[in-house]
Image (cartoon, helix red, strand yellow):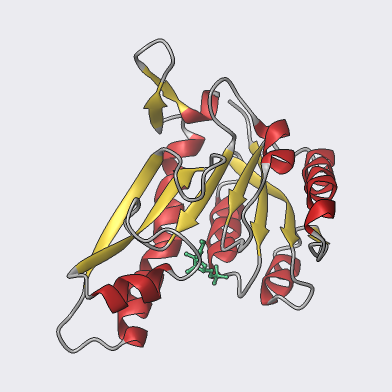
Length: 212
Ligand code: GAR
Protein backbone atom coordinates (compact mmCIF):
# COMPACT_ATOMS: atom_id res chain seq x y z
CA UNK A 1 0.00 0.00 0.00
CA UNK A 2 3.02 2.31 0.48
CA UNK A 3 3.49 5.01 3.08
CA UNK A 4 0.32 7.06 3.55
CA UNK A 5 0.54 10.83 3.73
CA UNK A 6 -1.19 12.53 6.64
CA UNK A 7 -2.00 16.16 7.44
CA UNK A 8 -2.63 16.97 11.11
CA UNK A 9 -4.77 19.91 12.22
CA UNK A 10 -4.55 21.09 15.82
CA UNK A 11 -5.28 24.18 17.90
CA UNK A 12 -3.60 23.69 21.27
CA UNK A 13 -0.99 21.92 23.33
CA UNK A 14 -0.58 19.12 20.81
CA UNK A 15 -0.31 15.94 22.88
CA UNK A 16 -2.52 14.17 20.33
CA UNK A 17 -0.51 15.49 17.40
CA UNK A 18 2.66 14.33 19.13
CA UNK A 19 1.26 10.82 19.56
CA UNK A 20 0.59 10.68 15.81
CA UNK A 21 4.01 12.11 14.86
CA UNK A 22 5.72 9.70 17.24
CA UNK A 23 3.99 6.69 15.72
CA UNK A 24 4.79 7.82 12.17
CA UNK A 25 8.43 8.40 13.07
CA UNK A 26 8.60 4.77 14.22
CA UNK A 27 6.66 3.43 11.23
CA UNK A 28 7.78 5.50 8.22
CA UNK A 29 7.03 2.62 5.87
CA UNK A 30 3.34 2.83 6.88
CA UNK A 31 2.60 6.54 7.29
CA UNK A 32 4.19 9.96 7.35
CA UNK A 33 3.02 13.37 8.57
CA UNK A 34 3.60 15.71 5.63
CA UNK A 35 2.24 18.91 7.25
CA UNK A 36 0.69 20.22 10.45
CA UNK A 37 -1.75 23.11 10.30
CA UNK A 38 -2.83 25.19 13.29
CA UNK A 39 -5.39 27.98 13.48
CA UNK A 40 -3.58 29.42 16.56
CA UNK A 41 -0.24 31.11 16.02
CA UNK A 42 0.93 30.63 19.63
CA UNK A 43 -0.15 27.01 19.97
CA UNK A 44 2.50 24.77 21.53
CA UNK A 45 1.66 22.13 18.94
CA UNK A 46 3.71 24.16 16.43
CA UNK A 47 6.82 23.70 18.59
CA UNK A 48 6.14 19.98 18.88
CA UNK A 49 5.84 19.74 15.07
CA UNK A 50 9.15 21.55 14.61
CA UNK A 51 10.79 19.08 17.01
CA UNK A 52 9.67 16.30 14.68
CA UNK A 53 10.78 18.30 11.61
CA UNK A 54 7.21 18.35 10.33
CA UNK A 55 6.43 21.39 8.12
CA UNK A 56 3.96 23.76 9.83
CA UNK A 57 1.29 26.09 8.55
CA UNK A 58 -0.50 28.61 10.69
CA UNK A 59 -3.74 29.93 9.21
CA UNK A 60 -5.86 32.03 11.59
CA UNK A 61 -9.58 32.00 10.96
CA UNK A 62 -11.07 35.25 9.62
CA UNK A 63 -13.44 36.89 12.13
CA UNK A 64 -16.08 37.47 9.47
CA UNK A 65 -18.25 34.40 8.87
CA UNK A 66 -18.73 35.27 5.22
CA UNK A 67 -14.98 34.94 4.61
CA UNK A 68 -14.81 31.45 6.13
CA UNK A 69 -15.70 29.30 3.10
CA UNK A 70 -12.91 30.87 1.01
CA UNK A 71 -10.51 30.50 3.95
CA UNK A 72 -11.42 26.85 4.44
CA UNK A 73 -10.96 26.13 0.76
CA UNK A 74 -7.49 27.67 1.02
CA UNK A 75 -6.65 25.49 4.03
CA UNK A 76 -7.60 22.32 2.16
CA UNK A 77 -5.65 23.36 -0.92
CA UNK A 78 -2.57 24.07 1.20
CA UNK A 79 -2.71 20.58 2.74
CA UNK A 80 -3.17 18.98 -0.68
CA UNK A 81 -0.12 20.84 -1.97
CA UNK A 82 1.92 19.02 0.67
CA UNK A 83 0.64 15.76 -0.78
CA UNK A 84 -1.71 14.91 2.11
CA UNK A 85 -4.12 12.03 1.47
CA UNK A 86 -5.88 12.03 4.84
CA UNK A 87 -6.52 14.67 7.51
CA UNK A 88 -6.40 13.85 11.22
CA UNK A 89 -8.00 16.37 13.57
CA UNK A 90 -6.01 16.25 16.79
CA UNK A 91 -7.63 18.83 19.04
CA UNK A 92 -8.65 21.16 16.21
CA UNK A 93 -11.26 23.34 17.89
CA UNK A 94 -13.18 24.61 14.84
CA UNK A 95 -16.17 23.14 13.10
CA UNK A 96 -15.17 22.54 9.49
CA UNK A 97 -17.66 23.45 6.78
CA UNK A 98 -18.31 22.00 3.33
CA UNK A 99 -15.71 24.23 1.70
CA UNK A 100 -13.00 22.47 3.70
CA UNK A 101 -14.49 18.98 3.48
CA UNK A 102 -15.21 18.79 -0.26
CA UNK A 103 -11.71 17.90 -1.57
CA UNK A 104 -11.44 15.00 0.93
CA UNK A 105 -14.62 13.25 -0.22
CA UNK A 106 -14.35 9.60 -1.13
CA UNK A 107 -17.26 7.47 -2.27
CA UNK A 108 -19.33 8.04 0.85
CA UNK A 109 -17.13 9.53 3.55
CA UNK A 110 -14.53 12.20 3.93
CA UNK A 111 -10.96 11.10 4.47
CA UNK A 112 -10.86 13.00 7.75
CA UNK A 113 -10.69 11.44 11.23
CA UNK A 114 -11.23 13.27 14.52
CA UNK A 115 -10.63 12.47 18.17
CA UNK A 116 -13.40 13.50 20.53
CA UNK A 117 -13.18 13.23 24.32
CA UNK A 118 -16.45 11.46 25.11
CA UNK A 119 -18.28 8.25 24.35
CA UNK A 120 -20.05 9.61 21.29
CA UNK A 121 -22.89 10.09 20.58
CA UNK A 122 -22.95 11.41 24.18
CA UNK A 123 -21.50 14.87 24.89
CA UNK A 124 -20.76 16.38 21.49
CA UNK A 125 -19.16 19.81 21.31
CA UNK A 126 -16.19 21.71 22.66
CA UNK A 127 -16.38 20.88 26.42
CA UNK A 128 -16.99 17.17 26.44
CA UNK A 129 -14.96 16.22 29.56
CA UNK A 130 -16.60 19.00 31.53
CA UNK A 131 -20.10 18.22 30.29
CA UNK A 132 -19.71 14.51 31.11
CA UNK A 133 -18.26 15.25 34.56
CA UNK A 134 -21.02 17.71 35.43
CA UNK A 135 -23.66 15.25 34.30
CA UNK A 136 -22.26 12.79 36.86
CA UNK A 137 -21.61 9.91 34.43
CA UNK A 138 -20.21 6.66 35.87
CA UNK A 139 -18.17 6.05 32.71
CA UNK A 140 -16.90 8.29 29.99
CA UNK A 141 -14.41 7.76 27.18
CA UNK A 142 -12.68 8.89 24.03
CA UNK A 143 -13.71 8.29 20.43
CA UNK A 144 -12.05 8.42 17.01
CA UNK A 145 -14.61 8.88 14.24
CA UNK A 146 -14.86 9.93 10.63
CA UNK A 147 -15.91 13.53 10.08
CA UNK A 148 -19.17 14.47 8.38
CA UNK A 149 -20.95 17.79 7.93
CA UNK A 150 -22.81 17.32 11.21
CA UNK A 151 -20.77 18.04 14.35
CA UNK A 152 -19.18 14.97 16.03
CA UNK A 153 -21.61 12.72 14.20
CA UNK A 154 -19.67 10.58 11.70
CA UNK A 155 -19.16 6.80 11.83
CA UNK A 156 -17.38 5.70 14.99
CA UNK A 157 -14.12 3.86 14.34
CA UNK A 158 -12.68 3.27 17.84
CA UNK A 159 -13.76 4.01 21.38
CA UNK A 160 -12.22 3.43 24.77
CA UNK A 161 -14.01 4.03 28.03
CA UNK A 162 -12.79 4.93 31.51
CA UNK A 163 -14.54 4.89 34.89
CA UNK A 164 -15.28 7.85 37.10
CA UNK A 165 -13.92 7.20 40.59
CA UNK A 166 -15.89 8.24 43.64
CA UNK A 167 -13.23 10.66 44.84
CA UNK A 168 -12.63 12.21 41.39
CA UNK A 169 -12.59 15.94 40.94
CA UNK A 170 -12.78 17.32 37.41
CA UNK A 171 -9.00 17.32 37.00
CA UNK A 172 -8.45 13.68 37.99
CA UNK A 173 -11.42 12.65 35.85
CA UNK A 174 -10.13 14.52 32.81
CA UNK A 175 -6.54 13.30 33.31
CA UNK A 176 -7.79 9.69 33.19
CA UNK A 177 -9.42 10.38 29.83
CA UNK A 178 -6.46 12.35 28.46
CA UNK A 179 -4.15 9.43 29.20
CA UNK A 180 -6.19 7.29 26.77
CA UNK A 181 -6.03 9.69 23.82
CA UNK A 182 -2.46 9.06 22.56
CA UNK A 183 -2.79 5.25 22.89
CA UNK A 184 -6.11 5.40 21.00
CA UNK A 185 -4.38 7.18 18.08
CA UNK A 186 -1.69 4.48 18.13
CA UNK A 187 -4.30 1.74 18.00
CA UNK A 188 -6.11 3.63 15.23
CA UNK A 189 -2.90 4.06 13.20
CA UNK A 190 -2.01 0.37 13.52
CA UNK A 191 -5.40 -0.66 12.09
CA UNK A 192 -5.89 2.19 9.61
CA UNK A 193 -2.45 1.88 8.02
CA UNK A 194 -3.02 -1.85 7.46
CA UNK A 195 -6.51 -1.39 6.02
CA UNK A 196 -8.16 -3.09 8.99
CA UNK A 197 -10.71 -0.41 10.00
CA UNK A 198 -14.08 -1.06 8.44
CA UNK A 199 -17.15 1.07 7.74
CA UNK A 200 -20.47 0.00 6.20
CA UNK A 201 -20.30 0.17 2.40
CA UNK A 202 -22.96 1.39 -0.03
CA UNK A 203 -23.26 -2.10 -1.45
CA UNK A 204 -24.26 -3.45 1.95
CA UNK A 205 -20.99 -5.04 3.10
CA UNK A 206 -17.99 -3.36 4.68
CA UNK A 207 -15.09 -1.39 3.22
CA UNK A 208 -11.68 -0.89 4.77
CA UNK A 209 -11.48 2.85 5.36
CA UNK A 210 -7.93 3.14 4.12
CA UNK A 211 -9.05 2.02 0.67
CA UNK A 212 -11.65 4.81 0.41
C1 GAR B 1 -8.00 16.69 23.59
O1 GAR B 1 -8.53 16.40 24.86
C2 GAR B 1 -8.98 16.30 22.49
O2 GAR B 1 -9.67 15.13 22.79
C3 GAR B 1 -9.89 17.51 22.50
O3 GAR B 1 -9.03 18.61 22.62
C4 GAR B 1 -7.87 18.20 23.38
C5 GAR B 1 -6.61 18.58 22.63
O4 GAR B 1 -5.47 18.30 23.40
N1 GAR B 1 -10.68 17.60 21.29
C6 GAR B 1 -11.90 18.11 21.25
O5 GAR B 1 -12.48 18.53 22.24
C7 GAR B 1 -12.55 18.14 19.88
N2 GAR B 1 -13.90 18.56 19.96
P1 GAR B 1 -4.01 18.37 22.76
O6 GAR B 1 -3.85 19.75 22.13
O7 GAR B 1 -3.06 18.17 23.92
O8 GAR B 1 -3.89 17.29 21.75
